[in-house]
Length: 475
Image 1: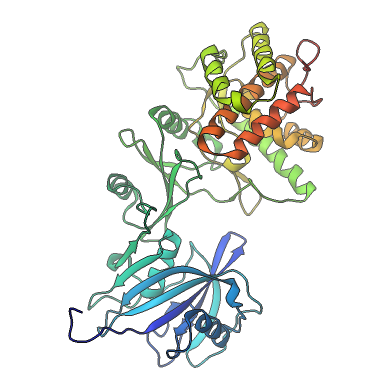
Image 2 (image 1 turned 30 degrees about the horizontal axis):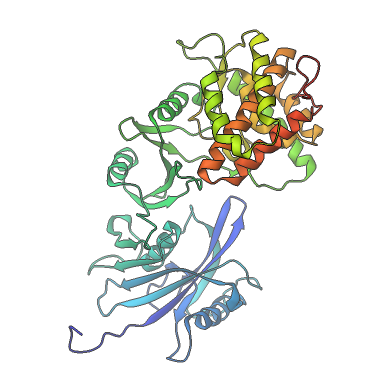
C-alpha cells in the first residue's frame, strides 16, 4: 500500500431500464426531489448497496422496486459499465455499477415522493435537462460499449451534465481497441460539427465496415464513415453531392468529406432499417410499393455530365476472379450455368445507363415513423442499367408474387424483355460475387443468399423479374 490507510468507497447501483419506443430505444429516468443531492436533476433509479452482506445485483432489484415499483428478476440483469466517480463538491470517490435491464414486471411510478417527484421514459437522443453528470457519464460510457469508465469531476464543476466540463474517460477492454475513431478522424469530424461527446461504433460486423454514430455537445447526431478504398469514397461523395439532394430529404446530407482520410460526416437519417423487420402482409406490400417508388425516383435523377450513355458490359476478368473465390461453395453445374448466362449477355443490346444506388437492399432502407422511406450507403452508386438496383431485392420476391407486383406498381412500369434478360445476368453475377465475398469475410448470410439465387435461377423460377433467356433459363 502506498497510503497510510486502506482506501474504501461507497458502492452505488444504477438501473438502465431500456425499452423499444416508437422512435427507437428509450431509457427510464427519475427526477430527484426534496432534501437530497442534485434535487431537480434527472438520474437513473439508483441507490447504495446496503452493508457487506448485500450483493450489487440484489441491491439493484431492491432499489428498482422501492423507487419505481418495477419487479426485476436478478436473472434478467446484465452488466453495462462500472464508473469510478468523484463529485465536484469534494470528499471521497465512489464506484457505481450500472446494469442494463430489458425485462421486468409492473409499470414505473413514483414510489418515494419525498426524494423523487417524476419518473418517465426518454429517447436516447432526447434526454431531459438538467441531468446529473454522474448519471450521464454512465449512460454515455454504456452507449460507447466500454466496460469501465473514470469520471472524476473537478471542484467547481456543475452537478448537472455540461458538455463543456465533460470529465468522462472511457476505458476499453483488452482486444476491443479504441472505442472511438483515430485522432485524425475525430479532429476532422469536430471541425465540421463541433465537439463530439459520444462515439458509438455502429459498423456492420465486417472488417471493412467502419461507421460511428457521433453525438455532439448540444445533442445533435451525425454519422462518420470511413471508406475501405478511394473508389468507394469517390462514389459516395459524388452521389451525396450530386443526385441524393434531389430525393428531397429521403437521404442524408453530406456535412464534410476528406479524401485523404477517406472519411465523410453525414447528417442522421430518421427511421429503422427494414432488414429483419417483421410486418403484416398488407404492410409489407405497402413497403415494397414505396421501395419501387423510391427506386423510380433514383433512376430518374440526372446523370453526371461526364457519364457514358450506356451501361458497361460484364468484364470477363472480374467474372473469373469471383468464380475462383466461389468455386468451393458452388454446387455441381453452377459454374457451367453461370458461364452460359454470361455468354448469353453478348447478344443483348446496350443498356441505357441511369443513376443507380448500387446496393439497394433492406439493410440500406430505413422506415420513418410516418411510414416514409429513407436510403443510406451510396459507396456503390454509379451509372448502370436500372436493373442493377433490383438484384438484391429478388430474394424477397421468391414465393411472394404480391411483393413483386407491389414493387413494380410503385416503380411505375414493367421491365422490357431485354431488361429481364439483363437482370438474370446481373443476378447470377451478384450471387457469385456474394459467395466469394461472404466466404472471405466470414459472412454466412451472403453465402446462403448467393447459393439460393443460383438455385432459383437454375430452376427457371417463373416470375416477372426472372424470365427465360433464349426460351428457357433451365440448364
